[in-house]
Image: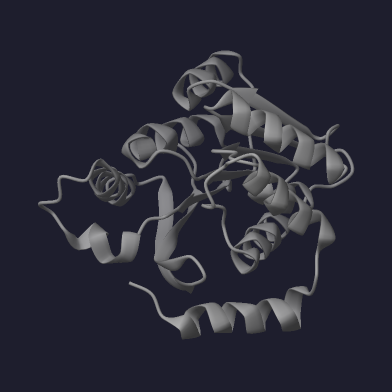
Length: 224
């Protein structure tokens, strides 16, 4: 499902509020040249993540799902001078492209790209006491959404912001009988958030260049 007007409105937003961005354009070009799938957040969505991280006063950011580093750069731009971002990527080639993009954007000293299954990386971070993170963005394989959420909570603190991408899936989230693991993982995420008293959450539908989808947004509360 798509509509040409959705992309046109995104273009209008970018033209009026974001303008041209050679660094991010170069990152997308490098992603394409490297054969990465074109599944990055849109420019307007990237700016939204940037602003949310700034509003949260984030000094330490965790990203689950790096791809080519497009959203990583948006988030890194929100960090203060002494800020730090850890981003997790399964595919070594994607991570290599991301490191190049992140370095070209001037954030090689602030961003740590870690390669391997995100669950294993997250478990190691929890064991190593690497938290707390102020802002956590989850945009990886959807069947693991609940595991990523639990890890985010373990690595967060009271007041941490947790954002999960792709939670509407063109309305697929309504299909209780779906055999699509991505939809089943997304529905499980909603159930887990709804049952978790420490999370104050909502979800927002989006339309635009990335078609019909949405974000789940939550703030972590104190343990009871």
